Amino acid sequence: MPSNELPVLAQGYVLRKLEAPYVYNIPEDQLYELDDEAFGFLKKCNGRNPLAKLLENAGMDSREFLEYLLNEGIISIQKGARKIKVRESPIPSLRYLLLNITDKCNLACRHCYLGSPGNTNIDLHVFQKAVSQFEDMGGLKLMVSGGEPLLHPEFRALMEILPSYELRVVLLSNGTLIDKKAAKKLSCFVHEVQVSIDGINSHDLLRGKGSFDKAMHGISNLIDAGVPVSIATMVHKYNAEEFDGMQKLFSDLEVASWSVDVPCVTGELAGNKDFILNMKDAALLLKYGSGAGGHESSGDYTCGSHLCAVSPDGTVSKCGFFAGEPVGDAADLRSAWAEICKKYLWTLDKLDCRDCKVLHDCRGGCRFRARQYKGIFAPDPVLCHVNGVTEFL
Image 1: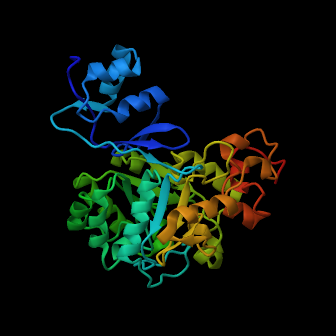
Image 2: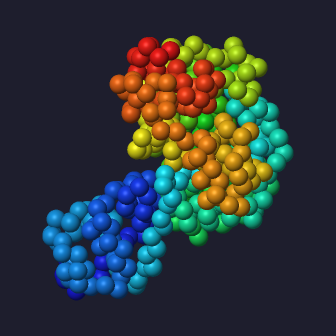
Image 3: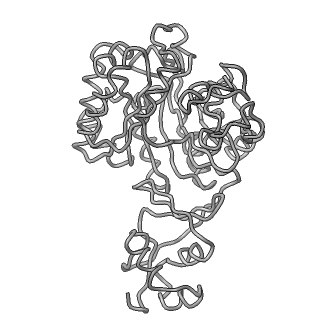
């Protein structure tokens, strides 16, 4: 690269100051940690500063570093300039926002943690306020969910708000309403659609007759429209023998990822306990999943140290399971996040299983499931079975 070239941070990449400096690839959902020197260099890659001057000021070895940036596609050489704005997060950083825009749903799933469908829809102003604050707080990934989000009466208007923000947008859907037209429209607004598939033959037992075929058609329409698809599966008694079949199906579809979890016994599942698989057997099936999703943590914190949720009424909580215990309002997301960190985020040394050898790997598991088991500081029994730890059960 000639020294008089003007490097530009590539489109789709943004700079974030979280617990450390990062550059985030929005389309590929990749987060690169940087040292201060590299971060300072990228902040000036705005298409106005000659390469030679940037390298001189940074005191960096140009060849290896530039080759890396170019090979990864983090910088490019192009005409024009780009305004680079660094978003800085509070600590712990708020990286993921679950935005439940409606509690309406066209299905009545027997394991839904939200309970029976309702009729509350988020206000457009509240939606935009939440998204704007989330970006300003250094957010990375916005997960738009429900209910079934496509049933929000102003769904298109909500989606049209999103392209002006530098965030990864993932739509969480049951897939049954995504025809070819809807898939094409979604391709303009989202980076990924996560569809819930809870079995092959058993999917309809949980979600209603014909729902599997409709969801699979929705997935096909998304793929045809060029929208990356991921799958979410909840373990239950009747799909326990179908995971190999699902693995082949999802592999053939080349889905982006497959998350597998064990549902908490709350909401509709509390009245449909015949679907519950015992924890020991359910834990064995978590090996099929991949990726931590929004519930990942860092440092010495328990599950979900970078996530919060907004309900359709605009209230903010730790996650969807804690929606009944709001800590604030989306009108002031920063204050709500501070309350979550104070009241619902704990360090690992507070847990009953603080001496467990795998604690830094599992983080104690789901706090809601732990509370249902023995208390908020108890271990998550599912994760104990996953890791072969029984001394704390």
